Image (cartoon, rainbow over all chains, first blue to last red):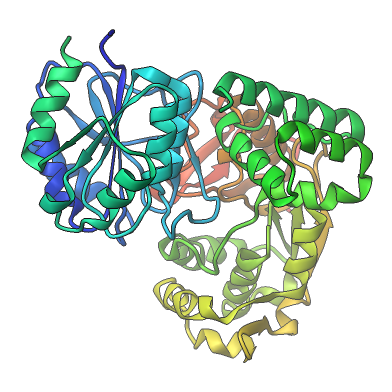
Length: 189
Length: 281
């Protein structure tokens, strides 16, 4: 298999620590485009970019509409907007209604990324308090992408990984600390 | 399971059908969001696929208002992004106060929450009686709702917080009456608002405006259409007129951006600069 081109991560409650663990463990040599959708009540993701940027070997930035996705960078979905990827690999934002009570919604981001990258995408569902992400992960798998779900026993909020396992199934179900090594292995082929 | 390629083909055909049958051109809408909306519309109308929707769009002309409403999905809040409204209140309105008559165009007014937010700002600044607001949208249905000014009362709490954060001087409840699960905006706020149909894709200059409000509308447009609409705004604004966009909108790929200078970049408020057709009145 060719190395994947992109990784999409989703989480909600308790997600910041989980994201720190995953992004902090990534290999600085990764050239994948990384997208993150983290539910939060904050108005901006400025602080989150800063917090994650401190632990991640890859740059962490807010995804900007119309800008082309960057290889080897982590892009966060802005607060209050759904994040989508266009076929020609630039970002698009939307203020369409919330999905699963969330905007940005993980399902929206996963689905759009799945349709662009198809079998070259890895979807990762981390800790979270609702079922957002499950349908998107199913779409990722339908289109030949790879699914990783944080083990529910290991998650601060198990609802999201559990829903993902039920609705999408998965290729890997592993503890939080094993996710980064697994991503490095899958991506550095 | 349909492949994305097949689905994209169906969406393209739908866009063509809508254009040829009814004259509405969505071909320059950003594809990813458009696809979601078209698929949702097909689902709402209980079509098995987007192809099914094509058939209905061709043979059931009475569906058109539904379709346009579904493709423009109007969502907003009162005083969404309070810091931006505060900037308008504190920095833009005092500048507009020097005009004897103020024209404001809100392009893509959706259900009208921002029209009424603006009207409140103007009222509190003592400018409303010499202001005309033109609120336009592509969707007839959205315009009807905007004109009614009726919203779910569950939104009131958030909107009140927004209003306060935007520098509100009173209580937001002074501007609406609540009954059962609905709130209705005070009719007086509508007195200087004209609601009208306008399609940013195909219609021209609408008025000579001192301020254009068009927030989170261009994010649904391709770079080409974004540029086209910005040129339309340029031609509609008086020199020095203000343009307010959504807080996450990017003008990095728009050549028309050269006609505007950032007034408050973070709040996405711009002023028209290099334009000689309209002079300050």
